[in-house]
Amino acid sequence: MPPVPHLGDAVNDYHDTWLVIPVYNEEQVIADVVEQALKVFPNIVCVNDGSSDNSAERILGTGAHLVRHPVNLGQGAALQTGLSYALSQPGAEYFVTFDADGQHQTDDAEKLVALLREDAADVVLGSRFIEQSDQVPLLKRIVLRTAATISPTARRLKLTDSHNGLRGLNRKAASRLRITMNGMAHASEIVGILARSDLRVAEIPVDILYTEYSRAKGQSLLNGVNILFDISLRERGGR
Amino acid sequence: MKGTLLIQLILLLGAGMMLVLFIRRWDAAHTRAWKRIAFFVFVVANVFAVLRPGDVTWVAHQLGVGRGTDLVLYLLVVAVSFFALNTYMRFRSLEKKVTDLARTVALRDAELLNRERLGASAGVSSTS
Image (tube, rainbow over all chains, first blue to last red; front, side, top):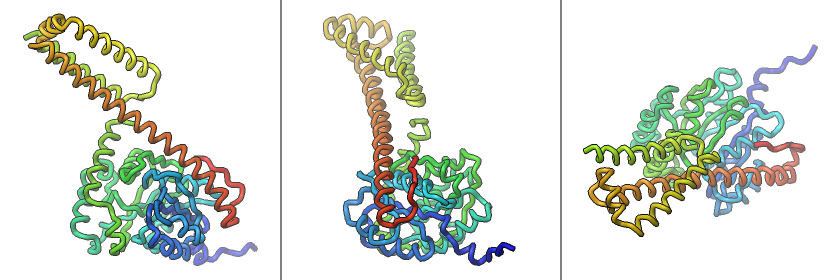
């Protein structure tokens, strides 16, 4: 009789899961973030997006795969490159996008993968707002809420947070995704692609660690203007 | 009165055409041909306007515009927006090409690098 796989083992085996981390000038924290994540997820690909600091060297010191953009292209492009790389790896079934600045937690990533494994959804997005999360600074909360509310696609999917970097995708969803917005507008673009597709999308609450570091590195609110501009032009049909 | 409508019609048509060009696929060969024809007409009209300013005023009157200069200004606004749009689209298309190129290079590079470093996952073919 073949041995019956023990459920507990299966749950903690993440050999079919790839963490995709876009990296741009994160030399201070990237090695720690990767080492921390490697304890749970054996497969990690870091896409160094033409950093001008020593991020690449720091990643080389870890056990993560490294993909180097020869020039800086933007976070959206780095995500797409990382997904393409992970998709080409044998046995890759689940994909999680993860931020390099240490604000995401592997516990949450595990929750995303668990949902994907149950086949409850093709895409699981992390949200900062499903539960009352006080750790999001007030001003940021207002801006992100507004972004989710005015975006027609986010409303259609009933999303509460369209700009969270923590996302889980199964193979079907990951190979469908074609991110063309190189800059920060890719978050809205991804939501748009999902809304137009027949993929099943779910949202779960995640905890974000707003450290001093991530606060300093985080997107400025002014950048929201750039995102709105890119998206509005795109939705006029400019391809 | 009728003339005023005519110039409005022409300018609105120009704006409409730009919108259509914007929405449709940009690099199609016939779009490029039309752009060249438009440019040619633009140059001929320029030469004409320089040599015979009086005639421009006459045309302007026919279209319901007070002065020839005003007509030239209106058409210039349309032309400039067209060029701005064209440049923007060209940049977008270039950016996409650079991205595809950089991604291909990065993925090929990474395969070798990571095979050497981590040993695992040999024989991976990269397709993007």
